[in-house]
Amino acid sequence: NVAFVCSTAEQACAMNVTGRYVVRNAGGPGSLTITGFRAFAPDNSGLSGEAARLRLVFTAVRAKNLVSIAAPVAILIRSRLAVGLNGPLNIVCCENLPVDQSPIRHLRQALEAWGNDADYVSFVRDRLGLVGAVIDATALGASSHEPGSLDVVVAGGFSDILVDAAAIKGELPEVVGLCPVPDLRVHRERKLFIHGLGHAGLAYLCYAKGLH
Image (cartoon, rainbow, N blue to C red; front, side, top):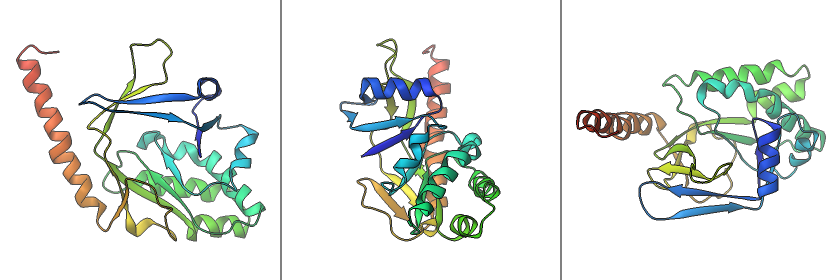
């Protein structure tokens, strides 16, 4: 039971019409076919109807764009409060966040600015978990072998999602591969200086060898 909020109405329409996409592993065998989802545009009124089913939210919009999701998130929060759902909600931010995690701070500030009633502001401040994450896999973009394909190619395999345990509100639902860790900074630096640096070093060596 997965609902996507897409960046455009056209993308949401394409996902709903196709009803499936494949995540392909560029580094080896294996792929995952994703089905059974619903897709919405950010301003779709049907989005508020998802609030009662919502147990966990993931983002994948790039760190610089994280603040731009404040509007649809505010709609979800208000919809939940309207039907008496006052329990915690966690948003796992699957972005390459800077060390100070300032995009998360800016998102919370933007969400607070959307509210002028005590219940909403209290929820955003005390019961909304904005949770940083580290993922070793890298999305390389849409598959190019099929025009208009929704398929995605990833490098690094289907790795776990490490999340900041200290930022979680309440309890997370059980999700395969979702792993709370006590010190996310260590894992972020490991990704930068081993995973990322390894990729960068290989890119220079390959260029020097004439491989493009």
